Image 1 (tube, rainbow, N blue to C red):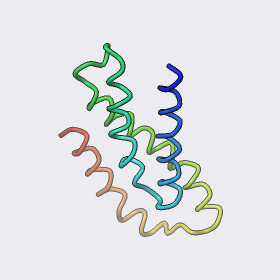
Image 2: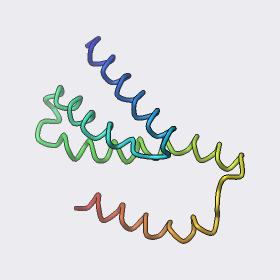
Image 3: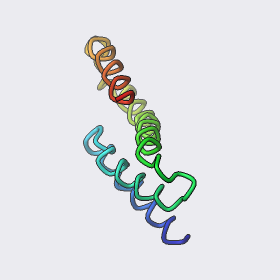
Length: 99
């Protein structure tokens, strides 16, 4: 159990570092890590990938909150561009999760 916790902390640190440096891309670490970590639980057998997709999407939203607040505070946010790409991004995300 100790190594499981250490692995989770290391994986989440790498995801947070990636998100902080590049503004995204944490799923590169999170998706395979969640699948790996969930494979340790027999109750999730056969649905690891679905759980990993959902957990990665939720984690990415949570990672984005502090980053967004900091950028808003620093005035590095373009509301016009955000409005333009929001609908496409939202629809693409819904389609990807459904697929």
